[in-house]
View 1 (cartoon, rainbow, N blue to C red):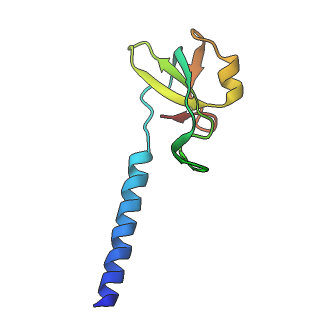
View 2 (view 1 turned 90 degrees about the vertical axis):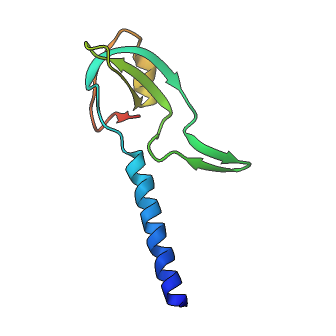
Length: 102
């Protein structure tokens, strides 16, 4: 009986982790367009005293909002350097090695 409980617990944990990772994936709806907004958010999911849980999708916390010709918008995580150089109104082209969709 104990073996069955351990196997079911491990299976449940694997399914739970799979669901978490499936929920973290983002698709690209806007691959290029004009930057219409910029913002910074702390890259933490939660903070407990000295312990902080970092968001695995967000390495920088710097984001730009891009709008295409069809008026669709999407947020992208960008590097601090890009964030500081980019201005609202600049043209943005998605690069999978440099940008992460939100």
